[in-house]
Image (cartoon, rainbow, N blue to C red; front, side, top):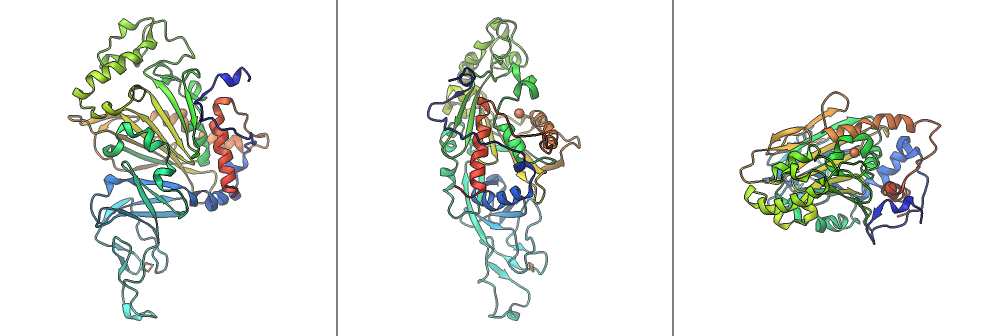
Length: 439
Ligand code: FES
Ligand SMILES: [Fe+2]
């Protein structure tokens, strides 16, 4: 074993071998690759479509535009959710044009065909003018699979894919302690970006960029390799446990004063930072103790079900192929890139924040500042137009365009990855096997 390989820590049993295939630029820039992804990747995985909170009553619907596809999820009379391709069976017009809505029937804007929430055609103009008679009751919207996990609704085009909870494994079990079910989406942002969707996917599959792209996190999140734990699961998903409430061990933050913002956060839990001068790294344990003691009376009912690690650390879950959940006890961040309908060098970036409902709390801190603790409207922008997508996400996105440009150079021969970027390597090997229909 080399000295380097001992720096990165992988949990025992969660460190599958990789082949070491060269990751060239083709998959980031070529239309052929994009077509292969459309055919063999996106059609076979579960997609997060939205949140259940937007589907309160029968007939409520949410729409998820994905590349050239569009899917509508609709609340049914029995409380279940069905998903349909967003296309009118008459002559193919898109049925639903808004993000979210509710109506007793879905009505096509072209010739006015109407469908019940269960997808059955119930009204057409001139019903007796069709060969075979009135199509009502016979024609249905094309349905896809639709399942839920916690506060989320997912859809899938593949009848052969595993059931959602199996596909998500091991996260439903690993994240159960957070009690995500009734969390509220208080931030719902998206933006058009000028880079391939995998650029940010790769970024989320490594923490090698933290010291350079996110230097201000160093006093609050310990990205030191001896303290960070990586895991790669059979399902193809990856994870990283990173200690929070602790400064990085890459620099000496331990022997002096407790740095900001750790000092203020410690104070907010009744832990006096002055008492920890010279032993900053011990704050994390003190905050665990304080959260256990004070959490219930401050309304954090979910703390009781969390492990010590969950109370203070960051669990960064990168699900294959394109969904990231970053968990802290007070915040679930969803970060995702989705392909552009036609251009491999563009994508849509999405950033949601969900928070637990805490008695008496009316507003909450998010990556874009303090917002009301209630369901947020969707805000879409173009990256670079000055609308923040969260300050850490802005930093990640800031490299996207220049990396896309660099990948287009004849001089780029393929990635040279460190051991701690093994999750990037594994992601690309799985992706390559899938798009070429080898798995
Ligand atoms: S295309 Fe929808 S009613 Fe004609
Ligand atoms: Fe980052």
